[in-house]
Amino acid sequence: MVERKWDGWRALRFRGLDGKPRLWSRNGQPLNGADQVVHQLGLMQRVAGVPLFLHGEIVVDATLYATKRWFESGRRRGGDKGRLHLFDVLTEEEWPAGDCNRPLHERKAWLQELAAAVRDDPALSWDWRPGSRSGDDPTAVQVVEDEWAFTESDVHDMVQRVWAVGGEGLMLNDPERPCRRKRGPAWVKVKLDNWSKWESPRRAA
Image 1 (tube, rainbow, N blue to C red):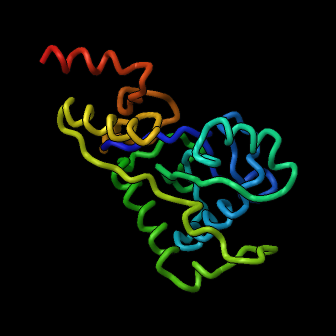
Image 2 (cartoon, one colour; image 1 turned 180 degrees about the vertical axis):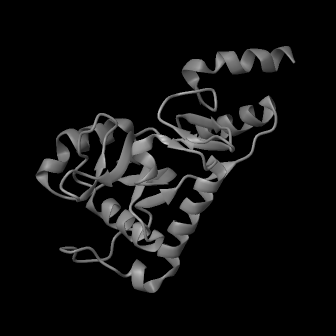
């Protein structure tokens, strides 16, 4: 399962000690200034009927630089920015255990179902967050699309398409992999700085 790697900040959505859901960085820092994203994730949780842990990459103005500036200082001036590219979902009960045996392709399908349910239900899509003077941007939360690669040539063609539009690279995932809190061989990044180890075998073949 191949997904585009978005060049932003890793964002985790779960409830804090006060019971309020927020976006958090990998280091446990709150990512304030993306209220419309948090609101739309809450709508997805309403559909699910259980507290959710959601995992994605948040990007401001399509660049890592703009993302970093916004969450480190820009958001203090007020406003609301960011687009969250979601790639995984667990229940909050599953997440603390750090061990979910449901395979990735099932979790991804559930993620797509939740997003579609919010998008297609007028009662949810028109549920404006408190304090908002207009409806939220419906593209503020997107599920990362995936394709299937069967050969190294498939990976080569896909990553070239991503680079052609200024993207960072790809994530290669074993669709059967469970969720674990540690890195392993079931997912691999393909970026310019590690492309040589992919390109050399391809040329040799």
